[in-house]
Image 1 (cartoon, rainbow, N blue to C red):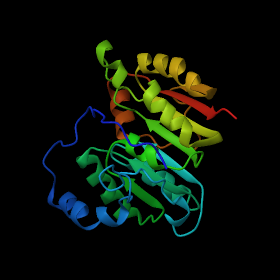
Image 2: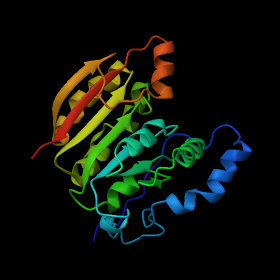
Image 3: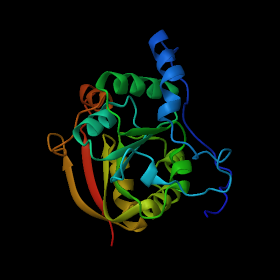
Length: 232
Protein backbone atom coordinates (compact mmCIF):
# COMPACT_ATOMS: atom_id res chain seq x y z
CA UNK A 1 0.00 0.00 0.00
CA UNK A 2 1.32 3.44 -0.92
CA UNK A 3 1.86 6.13 1.67
CA UNK A 4 -0.91 8.74 1.95
CA UNK A 5 -0.49 11.53 -0.58
CA UNK A 6 0.69 14.87 0.75
CA UNK A 7 -1.30 17.99 -0.04
CA UNK A 8 -0.03 19.30 -3.37
CA UNK A 9 -0.31 22.57 -5.18
CA UNK A 10 -1.42 22.30 -8.79
CA UNK A 11 -0.34 25.06 -11.17
CA UNK A 12 -1.88 25.77 -14.56
CA UNK A 13 -5.28 26.15 -16.13
CA UNK A 14 -8.04 23.58 -15.94
CA UNK A 15 -10.59 25.56 -17.94
CA UNK A 16 -10.23 27.62 -21.12
CA UNK A 17 -12.55 28.83 -23.85
CA UNK A 18 -16.26 28.05 -23.66
CA UNK A 19 -16.88 24.49 -24.81
CA UNK A 20 -18.81 23.82 -28.00
CA UNK A 21 -22.02 21.79 -27.82
CA UNK A 22 -20.25 18.77 -29.35
CA UNK A 23 -17.50 18.97 -26.73
CA UNK A 24 -20.04 19.12 -23.92
CA UNK A 25 -21.61 16.00 -25.42
CA UNK A 26 -18.26 14.18 -25.40
CA UNK A 27 -17.68 15.06 -21.75
CA UNK A 28 -21.20 14.09 -20.71
CA UNK A 29 -21.38 10.81 -22.60
CA UNK A 30 -17.87 9.50 -23.22
CA UNK A 31 -15.59 10.56 -20.38
CA UNK A 32 -16.90 8.37 -17.59
CA UNK A 33 -16.46 5.13 -19.52
CA UNK A 34 -12.86 6.07 -20.35
CA UNK A 35 -11.91 7.63 -17.02
CA UNK A 36 -9.41 5.63 -15.00
CA UNK A 37 -11.06 4.70 -11.73
CA UNK A 38 -9.36 4.75 -8.34
CA UNK A 39 -6.77 7.44 -9.07
CA UNK A 40 -7.86 10.50 -7.12
CA UNK A 41 -7.08 10.71 -3.39
CA UNK A 42 -10.77 11.13 -2.57
CA UNK A 43 -11.76 7.88 -4.31
CA UNK A 44 -8.65 5.96 -3.28
CA UNK A 45 -7.48 7.48 0.01
CA UNK A 46 -5.31 4.46 0.87
CA UNK A 47 -3.55 4.81 -2.51
CA UNK A 48 -4.05 1.16 -3.33
CA UNK A 49 -2.16 0.27 -6.54
CA UNK A 50 -4.25 -0.09 -9.69
CA UNK A 51 -4.81 -3.49 -11.25
CA UNK A 52 -3.43 -2.78 -14.71
CA UNK A 53 -3.96 -6.37 -15.88
CA UNK A 54 -7.72 -5.84 -15.77
CA UNK A 55 -7.73 -2.30 -17.15
CA UNK A 56 -7.78 -3.22 -20.84
CA UNK A 57 -9.41 -6.15 -22.63
CA UNK A 58 -6.25 -8.24 -22.37
CA UNK A 59 -2.98 -7.78 -20.45
CA UNK A 60 -0.61 -5.65 -22.51
CA UNK A 61 2.28 -3.18 -22.28
CA UNK A 62 1.26 0.15 -20.74
CA UNK A 63 2.30 3.54 -22.11
CA UNK A 64 1.53 6.89 -20.49
CA UNK A 65 1.32 10.38 -22.00
CA UNK A 66 1.70 13.23 -19.51
CA UNK A 67 -0.29 16.28 -20.59
CA UNK A 68 -1.78 15.10 -23.89
CA UNK A 69 -2.92 18.57 -25.00
CA UNK A 70 -5.41 18.17 -27.82
CA UNK A 71 -4.91 14.40 -27.93
CA UNK A 72 -3.65 13.97 -31.48
CA UNK A 73 -0.44 12.20 -30.45
CA UNK A 74 -2.24 9.94 -27.94
CA UNK A 75 -4.87 8.81 -30.46
CA UNK A 76 -2.21 8.36 -33.14
CA UNK A 77 -0.22 6.08 -30.85
CA UNK A 78 -3.32 4.13 -29.84
CA UNK A 79 -4.29 3.52 -33.47
CA UNK A 80 -0.74 2.59 -34.45
CA UNK A 81 -0.23 0.24 -31.50
CA UNK A 82 -3.48 -1.70 -30.87
CA UNK A 83 -1.65 -4.22 -28.69
CA UNK A 84 -0.63 -1.53 -26.21
CA UNK A 85 -2.75 0.09 -23.49
CA UNK A 86 -2.33 3.85 -23.30
CA UNK A 87 -3.17 6.14 -20.39
CA UNK A 88 -3.41 9.87 -20.99
CA UNK A 89 -3.16 12.45 -18.19
CA UNK A 90 -4.54 15.96 -18.67
CA UNK A 91 -6.22 18.34 -16.21
CA UNK A 92 -7.31 20.86 -18.88
CA UNK A 93 -11.01 20.33 -19.61
CA UNK A 94 -10.84 21.72 -23.15
CA UNK A 95 -8.02 19.32 -24.03
CA UNK A 96 -9.97 16.40 -22.58
CA UNK A 97 -12.98 17.34 -24.71
CA UNK A 98 -10.79 17.54 -27.82
CA UNK A 99 -9.32 14.11 -27.10
CA UNK A 100 -12.75 12.55 -26.61
CA UNK A 101 -13.82 13.84 -30.01
CA UNK A 102 -10.73 12.32 -31.62
CA UNK A 103 -11.30 9.00 -29.85
CA UNK A 104 -14.89 8.88 -31.07
CA UNK A 105 -13.81 9.65 -34.64
CA UNK A 106 -10.93 7.14 -34.66
CA UNK A 107 -12.77 4.36 -32.84
CA UNK A 108 -9.73 3.35 -30.79
CA UNK A 109 -10.48 1.22 -27.73
CA UNK A 110 -7.07 0.86 -26.05
CA UNK A 111 -7.12 4.18 -24.20
CA UNK A 112 -7.89 5.29 -20.65
CA UNK A 113 -7.93 8.85 -19.33
CA UNK A 114 -6.92 10.41 -16.04
CA UNK A 115 -8.45 13.91 -16.13
CA UNK A 116 -6.20 15.36 -13.46
CA UNK A 117 -2.72 15.71 -11.99
CA UNK A 118 -0.24 13.13 -13.29
CA UNK A 119 1.23 12.81 -9.79
CA UNK A 120 -2.00 11.26 -8.57
CA UNK A 121 -1.71 8.63 -11.29
CA UNK A 122 1.94 7.90 -10.50
CA UNK A 123 1.01 7.42 -6.83
CA UNK A 124 -1.21 4.44 -7.68
CA UNK A 125 0.52 2.84 -10.65
CA UNK A 126 2.33 -0.32 -9.54
CA UNK A 127 6.08 -0.08 -9.26
CA UNK A 128 7.95 -0.87 -12.51
CA UNK A 129 4.72 -1.27 -14.49
CA UNK A 130 5.05 1.23 -17.35
CA UNK A 131 6.89 0.52 -20.61
CA UNK A 132 6.97 3.98 -22.18
CA UNK A 133 6.18 7.59 -21.20
CA UNK A 134 5.70 10.64 -23.44
CA UNK A 135 6.13 14.27 -22.38
CA UNK A 136 5.28 16.37 -25.43
CA UNK A 137 5.54 20.16 -25.33
CA UNK A 138 4.96 20.51 -21.58
CA UNK A 139 4.11 23.85 -20.03
CA UNK A 140 7.46 25.70 -20.21
CA UNK A 141 6.95 27.90 -17.13
CA UNK A 142 9.45 30.35 -18.67
CA UNK A 143 10.06 32.61 -15.66
CA UNK A 144 13.00 31.46 -13.56
CA UNK A 145 11.01 31.58 -10.33
CA UNK A 146 8.51 29.12 -11.86
CA UNK A 147 11.02 26.52 -13.07
CA UNK A 148 10.26 24.41 -10.01
CA UNK A 149 6.77 23.89 -11.47
CA UNK A 150 8.13 22.11 -14.54
CA UNK A 151 7.65 18.38 -14.89
CA UNK A 152 11.40 17.77 -15.13
CA UNK A 153 11.96 18.44 -11.43
CA UNK A 154 12.91 15.95 -8.70
CA UNK A 155 9.42 15.54 -7.23
CA UNK A 156 7.82 14.54 -10.51
CA UNK A 157 10.79 12.56 -11.77
CA UNK A 158 11.09 10.42 -8.65
CA UNK A 159 7.48 9.33 -9.08
CA UNK A 160 8.07 8.71 -12.79
CA UNK A 161 11.16 6.60 -12.15
CA UNK A 162 9.32 4.46 -9.61
CA UNK A 163 6.61 3.36 -12.04
CA UNK A 164 8.79 2.78 -15.12
CA UNK A 165 10.26 -0.64 -15.85
CA UNK A 166 14.03 -0.99 -16.09
CA UNK A 167 14.92 -0.13 -19.67
CA UNK A 168 11.59 1.63 -20.31
CA UNK A 169 11.68 4.59 -22.68
CA UNK A 170 11.00 8.22 -21.71
CA UNK A 171 10.51 10.69 -24.57
CA UNK A 172 10.54 14.48 -24.22
CA UNK A 173 9.66 16.95 -26.98
CA UNK A 174 9.97 20.69 -26.39
CA UNK A 175 10.70 23.91 -28.25
CA UNK A 176 12.19 25.69 -25.24
CA UNK A 177 16.03 25.57 -25.02
CA UNK A 178 16.02 26.16 -21.26
CA UNK A 179 13.61 23.23 -20.84
CA UNK A 180 16.15 21.11 -22.72
CA UNK A 181 18.85 22.32 -20.34
CA UNK A 182 16.84 21.43 -17.27
CA UNK A 183 15.80 18.08 -18.74
CA UNK A 184 19.40 17.11 -19.43
CA UNK A 185 20.41 18.15 -15.92
CA UNK A 186 17.59 16.60 -13.91
CA UNK A 187 16.37 13.48 -15.71
CA UNK A 188 19.68 11.56 -15.43
CA UNK A 189 19.79 12.32 -11.70
CA UNK A 190 16.44 10.51 -11.35
CA UNK A 191 17.82 7.27 -12.76
CA UNK A 192 17.58 7.70 -16.53
CA UNK A 193 20.16 7.43 -19.31
CA UNK A 194 20.14 9.70 -22.37
CA UNK A 195 19.98 7.67 -25.58
CA UNK A 196 19.40 10.31 -28.22
CA UNK A 197 19.04 14.08 -28.63
CA UNK A 198 17.93 15.47 -31.99
CA UNK A 199 16.45 18.62 -33.47
CA UNK A 200 13.96 19.72 -36.12
CA UNK A 201 13.32 17.13 -38.82
CA UNK A 202 14.76 14.27 -36.77
CA UNK A 203 11.90 13.20 -34.51
CA UNK A 204 10.99 9.61 -33.75
CA UNK A 205 9.93 7.36 -36.62
CA UNK A 206 6.37 7.09 -35.25
CA UNK A 207 6.04 10.78 -34.34
CA UNK A 208 3.03 12.87 -35.36
CA UNK A 209 3.51 16.61 -35.21
CA UNK A 210 1.08 18.17 -32.72
CA UNK A 211 -0.68 21.51 -32.83
CA UNK A 212 1.75 22.79 -30.20
CA UNK A 213 4.69 21.86 -32.39
CA UNK A 214 3.10 23.49 -35.42
CA UNK A 215 2.58 26.68 -33.42
CA UNK A 216 6.22 26.61 -32.31
CA UNK A 217 7.40 26.23 -35.90
CA UNK A 218 5.18 29.08 -37.09
CA UNK A 219 6.65 31.29 -34.39
CA UNK A 220 10.21 30.33 -35.25
CA UNK A 221 11.03 28.02 -32.35
CA UNK A 222 12.87 24.82 -33.22
CA UNK A 223 11.79 21.48 -31.73
CA UNK A 224 14.08 19.32 -29.62
CA UNK A 225 13.55 15.58 -29.14
CA UNK A 226 15.18 13.72 -26.27
CA UNK A 227 15.03 9.98 -25.63
CA UNK A 228 16.00 8.41 -22.30
CA UNK A 229 15.71 4.94 -20.86
CA UNK A 230 15.17 3.95 -17.25
CA UNK A 231 18.43 2.65 -15.88
CA UNK A 232 18.52 -1.05 -15.06
